[in-house]
Image (tube, rainbow, N blue to C red; front, side, top):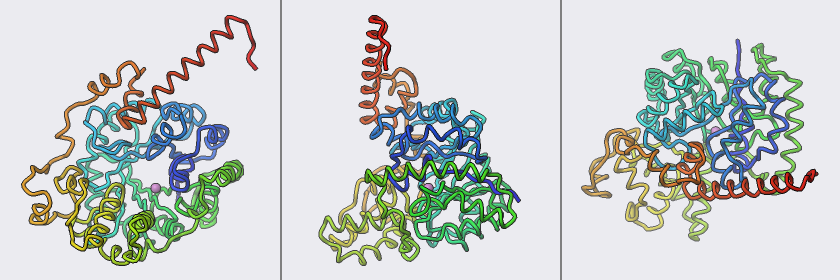
Length: 465
Ligand code: CO
């Protein structure tokens, strides 16, 4: 049996371990070798890469994508995209979603892994259609979470719905590392049975069981797993590619990765890693598993966030109470998956409920918008009296949230004006208005300065060393 591997070294691995700070400079020299390893795909774009490129690295994310494509032309390139949110923090109008996907495909993306924080299929519709129009792979991802309603049957229905929408493959996306081997086995079997589609499992080592989960996934018939080259594996990242490949090969699976080249690539990244340990971007703390995620069934990142918030409020002694309040808030809010932005919303609400001594005395604007339906549909219907008690008679959205958004691409073009030299620039601005604008200003003034130097060199006949 064949097992395919996607390597996350260029995206999730460094996003999970060191806030997505790996620069193109560190990727470039090794790309031709990565291209020869035999990966099913290289995950390299989306998630926070775009944001980190323009905010911290002064790199044009579109240029990064084109470069990766040029240097690794034989391996499908994969991106992660949050449905109607694309890579930003709000819902975009359909015309922006369509243009973004078109241009991502043109610039090099072959596999689009699309998910929605609430698993609301309506927030995926436009993205899926747009990907299908480009002829690229539409991989729909189930955001995995644990609650009374997130049963195997629930995920089965979701998988079936995704298949009907035209998914080319399905991913079980366990961003928190809380998928146990037992649940994974059941899920893979069931999704395979009802959809017949290729099944990909994505997990993190956060709680210390990812390798067991992958073993169970493959034994249950999963087609592909996501791993990371060893220097950037484990901890909050994925299991090590080399170790998984060797272990699976010995078990008789056909893993068509070049082991020799894997080792060469790992050697390269070991040096890269040392540099990030030295400059402090990679905190060794990230490398230790945190099984509390399994005990409390909430993501490790959310636990540490809540703890630091309580610390700021001088209330770490209420931590246990807040922890117990989390499942209560989640129940009131219709059991949303604990992923961004819902994990922050639920965590903060739980803390406010405990610290103010009265449940829902204070409610954030985000939770109010959520209750008005602006994020999409909650997994379970929320009690009407509860909604009324918080948002009163305010008008609600009960259809697809993006139906309420007017086309906005032309408006964005007008706003950014001549600062955008092409539609890629317009989208950079659309996704991150402030940071994007500053980035474009700097990019083009730098380019202009460079051109001047070139002019001077030409005029004076200097050879530049
Ligand atoms: Co991930």
